[in-house]
Length: 285
Image 1 (spheres, rainbow, N blue to C red):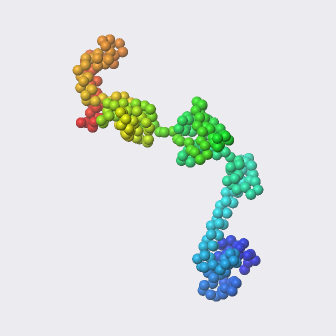
Image 2 (image 1 turned 135 degrees about the vertical axis):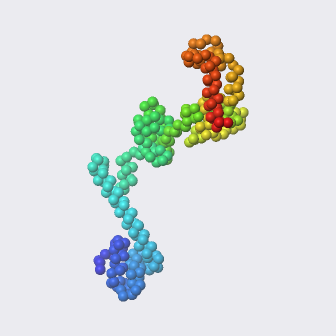
Image 3 (image 1 turned 90 degrees about the vertical axis):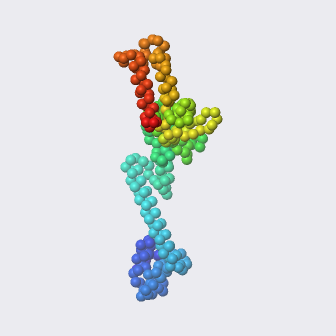
């Protein structure tokens, strides 16, 4: 028994009233179909049409969903109102929802492509520690970020900042970057300078000579210095010590000087080192 019209009842109240055993709008409370028929009668009072069983329960389910959504929105708004009061932010305006209030009170910072907002001191692709956020109106709006070196990056609405590309190390332990010249350590391109076009994860895209396009290498197969080959080692065996170390007859500054051994011994030791490193790179072959 209630004085509420069904339209003003919550979904819970409708369901409880449908099972209270009281007749309603001609629905017999003693009938075994009574709860379902009463729900249909209650829904008819709301919609003006006699629904099927499926339609009646679907309408009740929709009402439950709507009530839950309203509850969540009200909880969010109330939480925001309390937070605003505690932190000196402005109150909600009449009829203003949470999203409109947040848009009015806060400027959204640029985000990385993983949706995380850029923070002060964050590095981006091109900036070393963000120190300024400058919001603009012209050009469709956007935010210009700056670092201490004066580098700038503008992110427009709908765009994202990129995180710095992680360092990708070559076989020599040095980072490989676009625009550098590298060498393959063990393939048909071993003697060919290769220009780095881009670095993607652990793969490096390089241009091939003579208009042959481009190819990809694993970073650990590339080095910044011309790699040794068996042919180069075999050829260097026949050089005299001064030619080998590139010091034309004077000892000052020569790599062979200061080891406490003869130049020929130092040359032999260096050739053996090179041979061991080459063999290791080739898997002992």
